[in-house]
Image 1 (cartoon, helix red, strand yellow):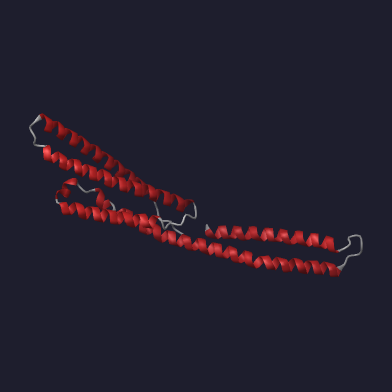
Image 2 (cartoon, helix red, strand yellow):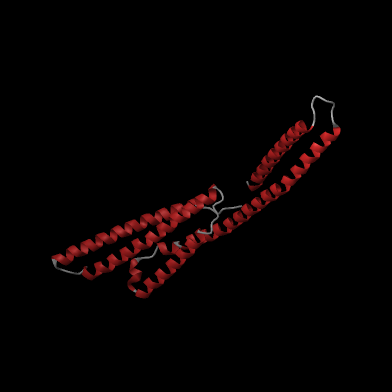
Length: 218
């Protein structure tokens, strides 16, 4: 694709340079010679020489600009391939977090360790997302999808935290015998189930988005 793009740019540049050369030559020749008189070879040569000189003057910087632009895009494409690989690897590592059960957080240290690991991965993912070069439709789509994934992951943590919080609140009153405690337990259980459902919906969406993502090959 990059080769075709460069070929197209070169062809376009050659076309317009030739149009400029022909136009300059014709106008210069018409202005310099008397068309009603005999053909003047010297005048023809002078105008031709000036046209070729001017063409060469523009040809060098245009060629350099095209080659530099192509090199820069090629370099960006190579970076995108590597960064997209790293992003997908990080995203796959989040599968280890999706199966966590809130009961595991009964040990406080487990919760803090889980939170630390989760946000460490999330920060790495966010940093890598910002390094994607949006140079074509594929990289733009990849970047947009990655941003959506980041937001889903962040909200997934919120739902998981809410589920854990309601789980522990429920446990405090689950064995209550008064009408007030029973009602309170039902409220906590309902909120826990709602948070759990929202969490599962985000996991499904995250897995769907991951399936649609692929490495940005050069």
